[in-house]
Amino acid sequence: MWLLPRNPDDVSEGLEAKLNLIEEAKQRSREKTQPRRAPLHQHAGGRRDRWQWLSLGAVVAMLGIAIGLWPQQIVMAFPAAAKLYAQVGVKVNLAGFTIDHVVPRLEYAEGEPVLVISGVVNNVSGRQRAVPKLQLVLLDDAEQEIYAWSIVMAESPVAAHEALSFETRVPAPPEKAEAVEIRFVRSDEITASVSP
Image (cartoon, rainbow, N blue to C red; front, side):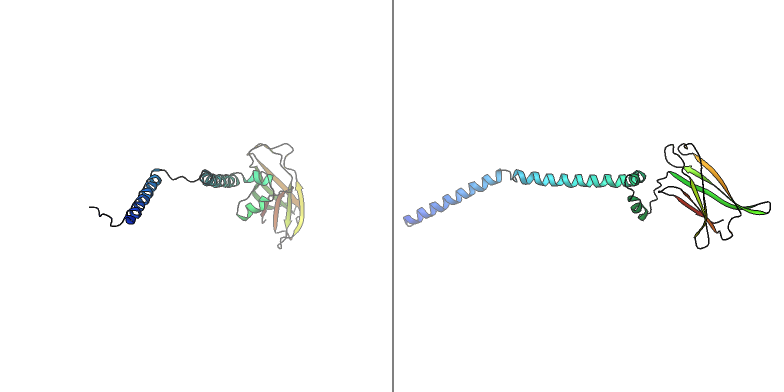
C-alpha cells in the first residue's frame, strides 16, 4: 500500500529522495561486484619488500653456514677473524699441523742428565705441506723462558694426514726447567705445553 501525497511539493521531494536512494543502491551494487584492487605500485612494493627480506635472510643464513663450515679458509682470507673464532671457542689451525703425544723424559749418559723430548707432528690439512721448524722452549715454574732451540722436521713436504715423529736431546738441561713448550716457527703458531 502506497500513500498518496497530499501536496505537489511532497511528490517532487519524495520522488527526488527515491531517485537518490536508487542511485546510491546502484552505486553500492557496482562496488560490491567489482574486485577491490590496491594500486599496482603499492601491491608490487609489498611483494618486493617480502622478496628483499627473504633474500637478506638467505644471504645471512648462507654466511652463517660458511662461517661454520670453513673457519680455516675464512681465517686465511681474514686473519682478524681468528680472534672472533677464539671468542666463541672454535680453534682454527692455520699451520695445518698439530703437535701430539709429547713425552719429555730424563735420561743419563755417562752420569750426566740428558733431557729427551719426543712427540708426533700430524699434517691435519687435506693437502701436502712443508713442515715448519719446531721451536722448543724450556720454562721455569713462573713460565719464564730459560732455554730455547729449534729443530727441522723434514726437508721435503709431508703428505696429507701423514704423521712424523720427532726426538730431540738437551744435554745438561737447566735445573730450573719445569715445562717444555713446543711451537711452530711461524707467525701463525700452534703451541703445546707439557711438564717434564
